[in-house]
Length: 407
Image (cartoon, rainbow, N blue to C red; front, side, top):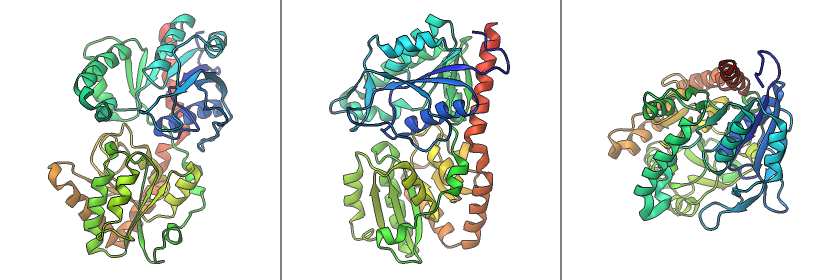
């Protein structure tokens, strides 16, 4: 159980949601499980069982299939998107299998049902509990309606208690890590470490580019700005549309490709049909991950206005695809984008001028092919810093550090 330096480790990974539902968390979980396996470690992944007839498939991470133990699951009625299954908080064969696995490390991907299961498992087998804080939960409180304020306060207290029971908390971005350290104050536990989610850099670099222009009915000389991710209020795609509308008035070749689906898709399609954007914006709807990344490779620029990220995984993917980035400053952005080198980071304040500043950044790169080319080259060449191999190596160092401390 001590995890002597150099020997393969047994790692149990527990997640609240998993494939075939696509999200940043499910992609990150697959990358962790397969990446650990590729590095020679033994992984048991406990995940909510997909809906009857559905197969988990893969999101594109390389490495061997992890050993899977399915947790009994259900679809949350009304609140969660279709296909998003969560585990029942019940004893199960999967948990018995995890205890028999005798993991050296238990790694939770959520602080909720599966996170509590992970905590009990870690205590039962005497293993350190590591938790990756993937989501800024407070940024989703608008889904709670009138319960938003009390719900956020209760959640904050719950998270503080959960972090305090972990041996280590991993934050994908440095700003989130600093926030967690600030909340924990002088508590002796846990270790807080910044470890970005790894990206399949080599795979993205070698994906055949899929030209979006014929798909959208755009001219061959269109300059395509892509954005990728879930279409939802917290991602601020409405702001991006407003910025793009301003930029397109000055740069008529600009087109916007919105890759993804989500609850805001209907309202975004309605806005895209307005006269100032008509025929300039194409929404693809939800696409399989390889197809989404291939479309990304076929674009010229990448833009994002979200300020609710922990790391900005899509920024790393865009840079690996060789796209210069225009991003509104926010959590995780400066960890990914090197301002003036592989993209432009736009100030978030004052808030009332965000659309205008984003528009000017898009106009600047649209009008300057030499700068676009230089930034594209820097993005492509510098993306190795996001690689899965680097992230897994750092994670394993943390595991071994915790195990050495226990000895």
